[in-house]
Every structure is written in C-alpha cells, then in structure tokens.
Image (cartoon, rainbow over the protein chains, first blue to last red):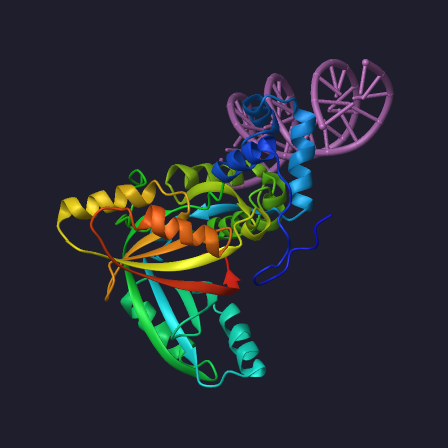
Length: 165
Length: 165
DNA sequence: ACTGAAAGACACAGACT
DNA sequence: AGTCTGTGTCTTTCAGT
C-alpha cells in the first residue's frame, strides 16, 4: 500500500503498473469522462477489473485528481509570466514564511524550489500587463524576506500537456 | 459563439461568465467527477441549467479538457527539470522545425516561447539523472538548429494547481 | 431561464468461475 | 484475477412554467 499523497516533492517509491494499468492511465489523462465501459473495450477487459484498477490507482495516489482544465485566455487571464525569486535570508523559518505567502496567492499557479541563481520559480497568470504590474508591486513584492525578482513573459504556448505516460 | 480552440497562445476574447458559471467552473476544476446533482445543490439551481451551462462552456472551449492528473513521482518520473533553449537561427522555418520536434518528445510536458536571453522554456520530466542525461544528449541536443541549453533542476514543489478561478 | 419528471446508461457491489 | 448479473444513481432530454 502506498502512503498518503504529500504536498511538495514526494519521495514515495514508484508503484508497479502493468500494461493494462498504463493503458487505462493514458486514456484517463486524455479524457477523465471516458466511462468504465469505454475504457474496458479499449484495453480488452470487462468493466469490473477496469473499475477495480482505477479505484486502486486512486487509492495509491497515482491518480491525484480529476480536473476540468480551463482555457486561461477565455476567462481574462491571457498573460502568463515566469517569475524568478530569490530570498534575502535562507533559514528554515524564512523559507516557510515565503511558501505560505505564495500558496495563498491565487495568481501563482505553480511554484518550484530550484537550483541555480534564484531560489524559486513561479508560474503566474494575469489579465494583462496592468494586472501583472499590480500583482508584482502590491502582492509579490510585499512578501516578507523577498530578494531579487525577475519576470520572463510568455509570448506563445508551444506545448502544454499533462500526459505523463 | 467562440471560435475553435487554437494551439499556441490564443487571442480569443474573453467570454462573459456570471457568478453561477464561475462557481460551476471552480467546482469542476477541483473535481471533474462531481455529479451535476452535487454541483446543482452547491450553486442553488436544479440539474438542467447546470447541465446546460457546463455544455455551453465546453462548446465555447472554456473547459478545454477533463483530465486525470497523475502523480509523476509514483510512475517513475520523479525528476522535473526546467530547460532553457535558444536557437542558432531565428527564421520562420527554423522555429517551425524546432516546435514540431519538441511536440513529439514525450518527456517535454510544456514548452513556451519566451522573452529574454533564451527563446524557449521547457518543462521536462524524467526518471532520474541518468534518464535526463540520456534525454538531453540523445534527444534534445539532436534537434536541428539548437543553440544553447541551460538546465535548472526542480528540488521541491511548493505549489501546483490548475485552479484559475 | 428555470423546474420537475422520466428514460436510458452508468457505477458499483455481489455471487460465481 | 477475471466474467456475469443486478440495483440504485446519474446523465440527458422533454414538456411545462
């Protein structure tokens, strides 16, 4: 049995998945609305084992979530920005405070702790430049212990998928 | 009516969404498996209008996809790398060739055309360092017209969400 | 635009191979 | 581990307000 899903980079060992499991995962990543029956036909099984395999992968945390993916350009969040941040101090408390602040900002979709010159990389969405400027000055820059910030603007999306297998 | 969803950065105008639509979107982003009935209760409507609103948002491309999100650490893809790439030449054909090559690489989950020193930013997943090294040397570096490459390793995930509203 | 009802399809559990 | 069968619930449509 796998342990519960953790926040942050999980260190859980990989779980053994056979070809049928991978085929099911592949289909559910493409379309979470496929019925068990539709999946069963494509992987050449009946509905019961497919249902059980899906349940097992959910329980093991392999399937983290079923989500509707929204087009950001259609809900007035057309601007995407990659944002690099370094902290002034690097003790444990300072890091934890920053993390809590970032997690509370709805504009920040992703935040990674990275190697190199900066400490964190953020993916931010905003309506436009004015909106992003407002986020930068009034929200991000207000976070305690913040050092340098560098913004890189996304001019076009070449590829965007969640298909891991 | 909205136009068809485009690949790359869409320039479509935002669509008007009322509070009920946003509430429905919020719920479906959290859990695409909520039943229409469950959503209807939370937004204080009956099933029919909820069903119609969801259908409308699907048709308008606001809801792009329903996807099962998989934990990359549990399927032997524990290493995430941010990868910066510049091209040697910047004419239209060279760009198109690069894009086609990148889209065919399963290790590359995301690729953005960016401002600044580099031309593209890639999000790559691999099993471990050996696997990434193999990707770098045998796949990425083999792409035509490739200039500089810089890899930044993700040491921890602070936040990762698709919740746009 | 919404409500309520009604038909068909589906998820899920059980008995069995 | 898998197939088959059944029950309750859901999606989806339609008449009515």
